Image 1 (tube, helix red, strand yellow):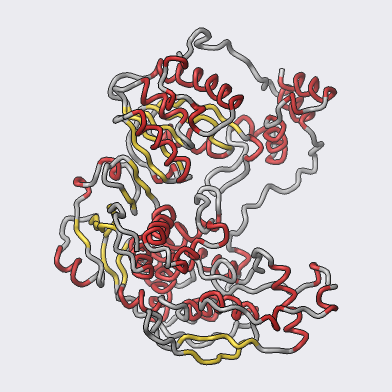
Image 2 (tube, rainbow, N blue to C red; image 1 turned 120 degrees about the vertical axis):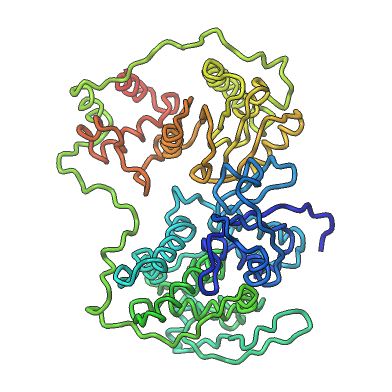
Length: 588
């Protein structure tokens, strides 16, 4: 194990204990991951929502072998007070990671960095290390795992008996997801193996763990459990660091000639497909509490055969039962469930799935020209105003090199354009600010805006909020080089920042993110200076439906609005000469 790993502080919310879990469930999930990873790299603080919490009761009875400390919210570092929990902060108090997915991914990465032999821990991040990386505002899967399921279970547990008779829609959503075909890297190869297995009538022997003896120096008790599933065989062979035999991999000639469209689909083994990932870690404490409560109330789980199978299967993963034991989580031994007749199943069609666009508009003609004409006929035209600060510019030649956007790893031409953009944005912010203001740079990327603002306005506090870790680390490196003391860095979805601020800025917040920033600023009664981009990425989300303005809603359908967004996303110089005039005339 590597030495001299910097200690970080992990802050977890604590509202109450219910049965064998700590609430909110985000805290139970975080503690379960720490136990699964056997991670002792963080100094853990519980932040009670109330004042009547017994310190000794919490530390001795709730957290197994993890050392924890209680801390009141007013004692939290100021940067953490601005964020939703869980949150992790480095010692200097300037860099904070907030939100469940960001914190869990960080725990995994730090565990592996400290001990590279723990490759199984790194594998929790999945293929290309992207498991739960997309923010909940745009990824329905991240939202389901990180927000919807924990909240649904907490609501189910606290509801009165008459209000918890039905299965929460988000639980049914997970059941449906587990029934969808799996798409994985190289899935055509696995699907051909499955076809060969089906034609041969073979049954895969999958190793099932008996006792949780997976530590070094101990043996793993295994026995053959015949299951007709190639997916199970592949999933568990990876978990046990085994390979499926070459004989199983060899394909017959007629199998190789089979079209991809004729190959059998793959079934779920774990939440995201064939392999055990962070998503399973997040879901297990939630589904466990839901199942415990359902069984106690005498509910029939016949509507949830896939969730029940998944729950049993997760327990077979090396380390899961041991981690659950450390967290005082007594896993259930569920019987095999057969699906109920279709007429007895709760109607899954009522469960929201992918966001559906509006129905086809029978009057829709198509193309940007009719849409622009329609707007102009209703008195809506684009109007251009003169530049508010035409002579204002930053003296780039006399600024430190680390302030220059070229230091953020970009081409010379792009850095020049970025300088021009920063001239405009900083000029507008300068007119709004006064000493002591808090300026938040949303979707900050590598800190091109925030670093310039922090350097030019030392009397203001600047906060950079960005979901991508590497971009924010680059920004902090540049800030450290400049010796800036008035700047914070928060890796989080912007929804997880709830601090007070005076001015919000965003340069090129892509698509829907611009609307999210504007909404956040309006709710906080803050001024904002925003330059949007990537209109073509705008689409309906859980939070927003388009068109957003009342005026546009009365004139344009969703599809017409999307055509307009995609048209606005084009640059004239990229178009053929005959198209440039069309775009120019349409936008006049």
